[in-house]
Amino acid sequence: MSWSAAQYTRFEDERTRPVRDLLAQLPERPVAAAMDLGCGPGNSTELLRARFPGAAVSGLDSSEDMLTAARKRLPDAAFVLGDIAAWHGPERYDVILANASLQWVPDHATLLPTLMQRLAPGGQLAVQMPDNLEEPAHRLMRQVAAEGPWTAKLAAAGAARAPRRGAGWYFEALRQLGTRADVWITTYHHPLAGGAAAVVEWFKGSGLRPFLQPLDEAERAEFLRRYEAELAQAYPALTDGTVLLPFPRLFFVATRV
Image (cartoon, rainbow, N blue to C red; front, side):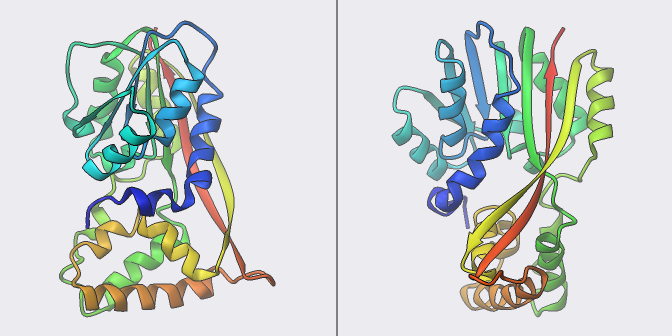
């Protein structure tokens, strides 16, 4: 299963809110060039361009399906296929945005200095990452993976995301690079209509992908059935059937000085 733009954008308003909040923290200033790393279907790129309308805005993603959606949304922007971990070149950017993408990239101790080097003097790296690996939705993914007949197939699924680091780790790592850093965590509470099934649909577009990809069709259906049953206990529906999904996210803005 590759990334699906259609699945991801089923909850576009909810997924876009954090990047809107992140971009609001960047000061008004001249920006000539901006890059959106892990641009997905272009929702974050669209906001980046609106925030800095005078900038030449580019986007990079590892999914052709996502890039097709992004090019349809912003036909005049430059979108390229690529891996964030292997991103290199001589260009320097005034803003590098990474919205809900760096959690899929390993070795942040190496990644952060590489990204800071791609900034022009005074440039800013603006990052948002889910901080939810210990939330019930993720713990139950790992539990269902460990308890079913697919255990061997899914042995590595829980390690698909980079190891979780706390706010203090990022602040210290960025400070050691000589940057000015602002780090914070916000927990959003997303109301999802449809009970536990809606929570399943949310994570099918993101965190469930490494667990579903190795399974055949019958295994996938059974995995999702068990997962949804567990979610119904962890996230009881309100009287109107809505589930309130808590979703902590880690943010930072690092300025190259």
